[in-house]
Image (cartoon, rainbow, N blue to C red; front, side):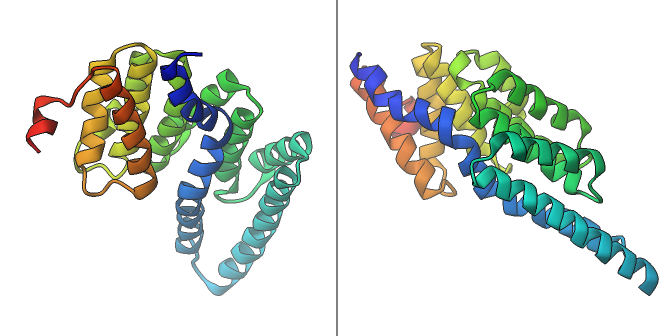
Length: 228
């Protein structure tokens, strides 16, 4: 195994086995919080509030039970339970279940199916941020294919400085460029992440690894990054 393959083995393993869980933990509260807000805003009169609360509680229990099945290791049972929520759950719980179901497919190594599930969410969700979140998930899963175009088509528009997920998009595209052997293009994106004061610590540490490896390969910083 070459030095390059060794240095990036950790990244590949994370993308294959842990990325979906990490991203779900990072963005899951936002997804759930958004669903709760939507549920609360719909309430009208007292009777409607009572009915909706009762239904929401039932949906929460159904969704939580599905998650518990997954966390306990019963992946088939968990997937079936999530599918039931998608088909019959109230409010926004079917949407939450679709996200978790797609993540579960990825955790089981069913990458093509997971990407297709996220692509479907990109077109069916009515909320822009949820569509973008689905695109980010799909992009990370596509890194190993080494197809920068496929990844850029999904998250390229998120690279603008004002977008809250810009660095996740840059990382996914940069890793795909690296996988494809486009080292200079990868360096440009990793430099942009490193220079962004909003970069989170864990991402900053990963980018330091990427940049160190590229430097060792003779791919130095871009002119803009060097001046900074």
